[in-house]
Length: 211
Image (cartoon, rainbow, N blue to C red; front, side):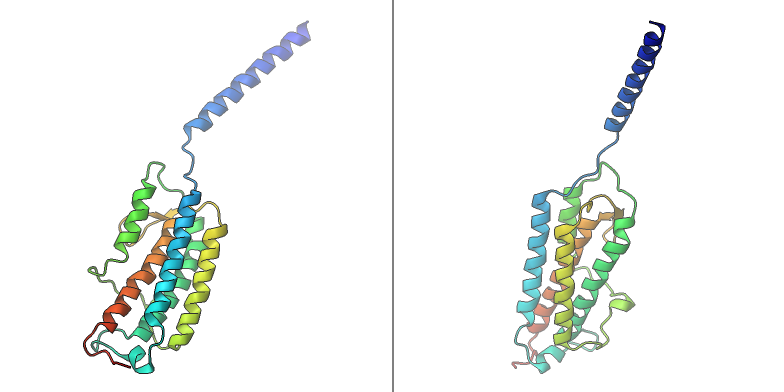
């Protein structure tokens, strides 16, 4: 009986300890998993903006690709190079840095963050200076830039399609708040949309070559 009482006391202590641990774990905010609908929405964004880049630049002549609306403005060929460079840069940053970054605040409004990225990045009323590594230098022809962009965009889509934990890490961003990896994918997509709009502005210039 004595040994039974000793075992019973130890068992009750273990059960109490387990209960305390369980309560402690429930008090820790769980990370916000990426929903299937958000994943599909992100993939749709990537596909739509990929399509728009191709449509905006399809069938342009060499003269049209090289035309500049001003001495300090980019040609469509240069914009294409920038889009391609940026797409690869964003994906490398996401996979090598953001996915290794600390977690964000548990109470951050992820839906508001998603919407902010998609709205802020495409807004061309706010100008931005491209960093040196993403500045076009003529390293690729327009066709090569397009190929580079399509390959990088395919890798971005596959990353979004197959990767878990995209809400679990955040880093600071140029739009004034930390963004998680999924939001940086949206950033990359919105960035190509921003510059597609720039291409359309070049094509709308009254001096744009007819062919």
